[in-house]
Length: 190
Length: 419
Image (tube, rainbow over all chains, first blue to last red; front, top):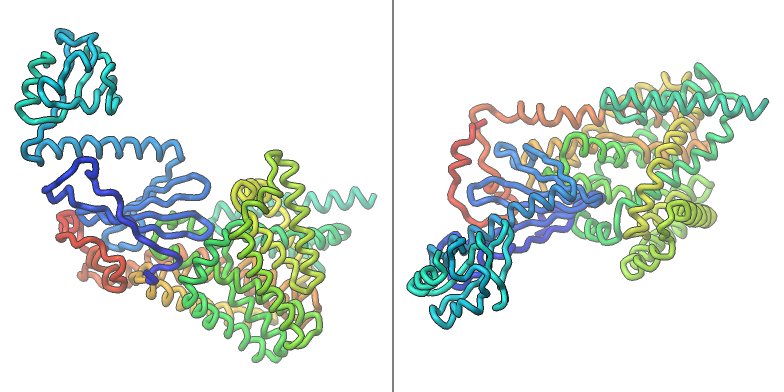
């Protein structure tokens, strides 16, 4: 710890899939070890090494500016690229990276867990439940499947309430047994 | 008539400084050496001696020192200072042991007496944090792994100043080493008290000063800083240290607002301060000390390089980074002049001012150039045909605590062109 003045501490980032219960895949156990370094008079630096050996980091200036830095492979102490981001730009970038993480996590879940299926079911114009609510489908009673989120116009509505009404073009994210998911897909006309 | 001449002279000086600053920016130099040269030109024995503006410039120089140190204090929070002190103390001590003795020895060898030697030790010890910060920003090195090492050394030098300046102030006032003990202790106690109070009540202090109205904030800040600086001067703790402590004590919105409001003022009065130092120096006295100044500059370039190299190596940085760390620290600037200015004001050895001016002229120019050269030089030093191992392993060699999760040698690393 004393090797890198001034103060340095490292903490493990959240595992990529802590939402999703038991995991067996190696990638799911991957934890990103992020180092935090104080830059006196400037701000902070956070950095980590990717699985494939690239080192990258973010310098957070006190002014709100963020530098996205990529380290040089031949001289690992030096930055090879520095991308200056305003606070709005760094938020936008964070959003992009963060949402892809959720998608990947969900995709991974479907492949990894035996006996558990996750699926994206489209509510088409011809579906019997267009205009109907989640309660109307009685999905859980009839198929044992939970509707955990609805995707509408590129945004996710997590944990929709029973009185949530479907519109054509919605996508229901459902979790259950493979047979139950199939049954619900038939029911929703997806 | 007097007022007209004063305005004409001041306007001429400021316009000249503006043009010099622009020139410095164009050629990637620190403006400090150019301001010093301007001061030499306007002073006694210079090209264009000023008649009436001297008085204003003298007061402006005092304000310049206070603003320089106030803004420096504002850069740091108490937490950062303490954290740095804990983590990087050996690097700071190494820096001191390497860079104070050359100036001390030079003063003694020149036969200027122990007091001038102590002053010269301070002049050679302290790097220019202004120049270093600018170089780090310009070269995009904030993300580099040696940068925290560089910044910690700069922080520790600034903290050391808080003890050194009161001692020198007392010694210059004719006191003995023993009589400087009290102000020095007082200064250390004041620094400790301010740090402790800031950690505990920092937000309250800052809220008292803070105002959403820029005008009110500016006036309150300057008022507090000048009062504390004046009180510190009266207690022989040195005005500069008082201003530094005010800067450290402020945090949060007050500090952010203060930085934004005071930076332009600092730039103005710091420029006046450098001119003032140049004014006091007779250019005809430069040639006799040129040789000594050049020798001292060469020696202390090497000691700074060595200090930065060693500190970076301690932190597990590889060769190119060690070279970069050392080179960034070579520049001397504002604080060397602050220290020398105290001695000149006290009428110490007449050649001390010219020596310090020449020394800073050399290193404020050479420092940024060396910092830029570090990368190409490091690339040459690396023997061809000997590829460096990829990052994680290099770092793990000296800092096992930071060992990243074991990963198979990546395809990317294999694909990378070897050096």
